[in-house]
Amino acid sequence: MPFRSLARTMTGGCSTGTVIGVVTSSRGGQIVASLRGVARSIPRSVWILIGVLVAVRVGFAFVLGLDEARLIEPDSNDYLSNAEALLDDGRFLTAPGSDEPEFERTPGYPLFIAAILVVTGRSILAVALAQAALSALVALPMFLIARRLFGERAGVVAVVLFIADPLSLYFGAMVMTETLAALLLGATVALLGLLMDRHSSRSRGWLIVGVLLAVTTFVRPGQYYLPVVILGLLILTARRGGWSLASTSRATAAMLVPLVVLVGGWQIRNAVEVGSTRFSGIEAVNMMKYRAAGVVAEREGGDWREVRRELMDVYGPGFEGATVGEYYDNMYDKGVELVLDDPVSLMKVTLSGAWRGAVSFPADIEGLITRWNLPDLLVVRLVVDYAMVPVWLVALWGLGVAWRRASSRPVVLAAVVPVVYLFALSSGPEWYARFRVPVMPVLWLFVAGGAVALFDLFRSRARRPSG
Image (tube, rainbow, N blue to C red; front, top):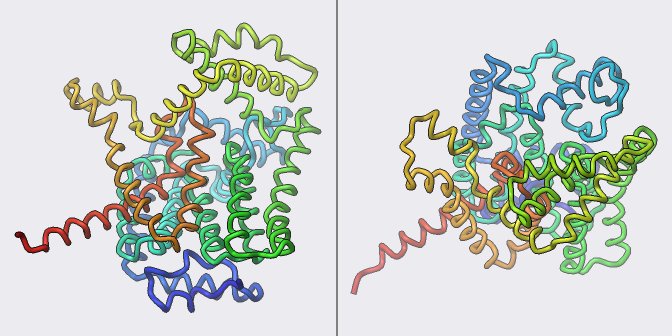
């Protein structure tokens, strides 16, 4: 089915409108027209809220960044060094002048940093301000998806919740990958939802999905296997839409081409530069130092951080090879061996990590009690540790409301499947609130839908005559 301009599809009513329009059935000029249609379909109240969101995010980043050290997390220094190497040496190195190719990190986020540094005199504050402003754009696909699933009122509520989200606010200012990943994930989900909603086989739309997935993988290499999951959604869409074999093949090829060219091209670079065809060395680090350490700690007792050091003392010397790539390959292989040796402990560690990632507070509870001079009471710890539980429950209610409408299910799948993937693949002993940032927009839109549905339910019951 050909794409239709949002200027036309939205006229029938916002609650059942298209998720987002990025592609049309004609040429490049109509893409711009379609985007204009999206903009016109968004009510003024939402644009005002997005303006407030920009002001809040940028203002917070500015105040926090008056001391640039407060914008830095441990991983930030790696990204900044990579960005400076790109500017100074024109190569993706571990640090300027090092002549050592970077393998653990991927170039997506350092390129973003370098683009800002080159025009701002290498100001870290400028990176935080630009990132904070970009983080507000996540509200656009979030509103459009919420409106498609629950109506315009829920879309407005979703934006309000996103404004009030302290996790997204804080990490929107940090020199970290989460905010850019959230924007890319939101755009991917919105476009994927449109294609699935319309059962569209148009190659151009699936090509853009492939590009977005590739760029997202360069920003956060943990998304490396996400295209496999999205390919499953493409096939499901093909079956529901009754596509021909030729149409399915063209759409599949369109999505895979940018992934093969961009992601595969980077793997060739790694094979030449470091001697490994892996997309990133961080995969080996995660497997050995987090998954394997967590599994061994679960089985034998002890803190996984201590176990990690012990494992590297025992096995680390054996990882050495002729190349940097061989070191990481050997690390990954040993990590997989340790993990598969105890699937029960692996399941426990994974479920524990997923729970902690879903509900954990952004700050350490002990430090929070001390810094805020809170009473060290059980009720205080319960509030801090489980504050996210009711949020997830309301989101699940909203998910159920949307799923009960068969016409909404393709969009629900487009939004939920990437979130499930992120939790399933990333859950481990190292998980904490920061890793939840890319999924928060999706969470808030379902919270908004659930809250509106519950409010309407209670109001209708209250209006019923008694007796």
